[in-house]
Image (cartoon, rainbow, N blue to C red; front, side, top):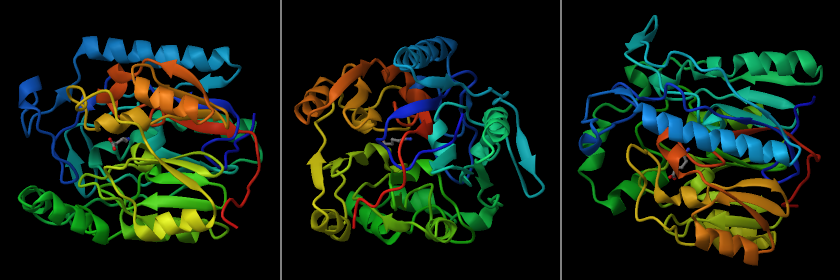
Length: 365
Ligand code: DAV
C-alpha cells in the first residue's frame, strides 16, 4: 500500500468512495445560503436529507465501488459521523455538520502527500474526522507517506465579508462575474482557506480556482506549501464558483475538458496553447438544471473520473458527454450517479485517488 498520485489521469489503483449516510442540508452559517422551499428546506431551515434519497445515493455509490473493484482497484470507504449534531470551537458554534460524500473537497493527494484542506464552511470544519481512520491506516501501512494538514481555520466573522450574500444576490450576473474575476467573494483574506476540490493536478502544475470556498490567502499557502510545483491561481466566468472539477477537467496529457459557459481567463488559455494542450468544450448536459436539493450545477455531467489515460467513468445518462469522450478516444465506463448529486457532487467529487501509478512529470515545459 502506497500513497501516490501526481495528476488526474494516471492508472488508478486505490481510491476512496464517499458515503451518503446522515448528510444534512446544513444549518445556516456565514459561508453559504441554502434556500429550497419547494423541497421542504426554506432559507434558515436545516435537517437530514430524506432517507429514500440517502438509500438511492448509497446504492449508486456502492455500485461505483463495485465497478471500480471489478477493475482491480482497491476501494476504501469513510466512517460516517452523527452529522446532525452541533459542533463548536471556542470562537463559534454551528447547529449541524454536513456529510462524508464529497471526499474530493476535503483531501488532496500530491505525490506521496495526503493534505487535509482547511475547508471554509463551519459545518465542514470537522469533516476530516470521517477520513481519519483511513488516513491513520495509510500512515501505518506506508512509511513513505507524508501526512499534512493545512492550518486549521478560525472561521470567525472576520473570515467572511459582512453582508456578502444580500449584496451579491442583488447584482447582475456580469457584476457577479467581475467580483469572481477579482477574487472578492464571500471569503475575506483574514486567513488561508481552500477546498481540495478547487485544485486540478497536472504533474508539476497545480491549477487552483479562486472560489466561494478558496481565497487568495489559501492559494498563497498552497504555493508556499508546494515549492516544487507551479501553482496557478485561476478564475472562470461562473457566478457561483465552487470547486474546479465541473469547469476545468484535465483528462490526459495535452487535453482538458472545459465548461464553455464559464470562460477561462486568457492567460490560462494561452498557457495551455503555448504548451500544445487542447481545450475541448464539454458536451451540453442532458439536464436543464441540477436535481432537487443539490447545490451543484447540471455541469456535473463533466465531473468525470479518469481511470487511466484511455478510460473514463461518466454519468450513465449523460449520453452527449459519453459520445464526446468516445470520439476523443476514451473507453467510457457509464456509471449511474445522478442520485448522488444532492449529496455534494459527481464521480470526481465522490472519490479521492490514494494511488495512481506514475511519477512527477512536467507537462508544460
Ligand atoms: O460546478 O456544479 C461541482 C463540484 C462540486 N463539488 C459545479 C460544482
